Image (tube, rainbow, N blue to C red; front, side):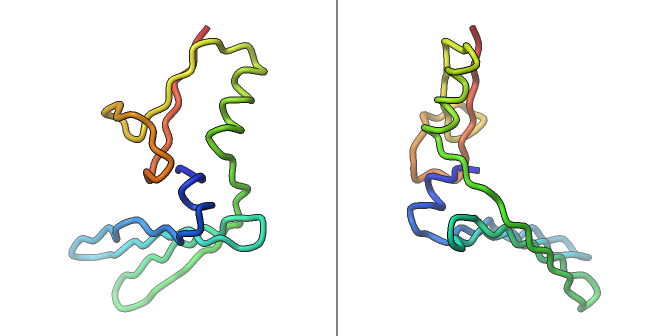
Length: 98
């Protein structure tokens, strides 16, 4: 999850995952200093939701933590195909090594 995107003020929602039996919805909403992660699972006409408050950690915070742990080479991507990191992307993937 790319919290820089969420903290920019947009309520972020992933596409709904559906098959013939269930639908799974995930969204992130900024609430005070936390990000409220909401999931809703719908099956047989009934829905169950779960809410988890998350502490957002930004790209800069993660890089700083990795550097403090001694990592020298840090690469950031927006997806697993290694597209360059963008603050408005939905994903943040970091690869770090010494």
